[in-house]
Amino acid sequence: MKIRQLLSASLIGLAALAAASSALPAATATTTTAAQANANLSMLSRDNAVLLLVDHQVGLLSGVRDTTVGELKHNVVALAKAARTLGVPVIVTATMPDGMWGPTMPELMAALPGVQVISRTMINAWEDPKVRAAIEKTGRKQIIVAGVSLEICASFPALSAKAAGYDTRVVLDASGTFNEAKRTAGLQRLLGAGIPVTDYATAAVEMLRSNVDPKAHAVYSDLDMPFATLVWQMQSGFSKK
Image (cartoon, rainbow, N blue to C red):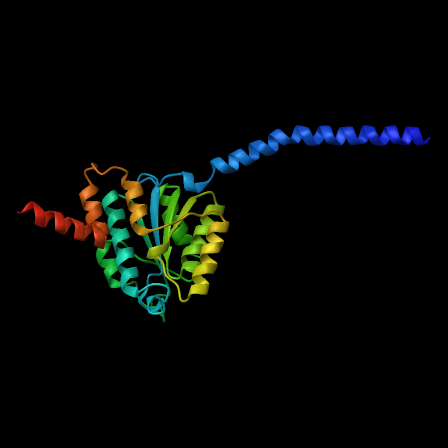
């Protein structure tokens, strides 16, 4: 009787081992697929991207502490200008602009003539039907997001859009928040969800692709990178001698 039980147990064990072995290729394939789906490996395209700017409002900007307000303004305006030059649609939203958070910063609106700010009450911009409809209308699948604050206004729509099948990126230096803890929490959640974080100039030149592109000079002018401007001034000065 004991011998029969031992044989039966051995057969069950062998069957389980065989089942586990047959599952290995599937597991490997899943891992490979996940690696291939890594958003960091996918380049931004001016033909497939849309820029979503969330709540760059004067009231919220006044509370930004992880960067200077001046630098944040410069970066978001430069990114918006470069996007327009490249033909990338720009969508601007604001949370209750007639309330305590106030209007969208005037420098940004001046850089985007004709763009209407979408006013909303939903905290997550992706959950606002008007915002989502504006994105879907573009037919584009890459969403570049920047917002104040980073961990809510930028992160929430980026997370929700990724869950809906979009390729989302968050522009760190065109976003801002109110202390370092919020910045850290926002970054950890984005990276944990596999959402790449980029900067305003990298996002733009990634879409530009080539320095001999007819729009290259205009894009670099839009980006207004201080060091590049200085180098250009130095070169201009030397060439006149």
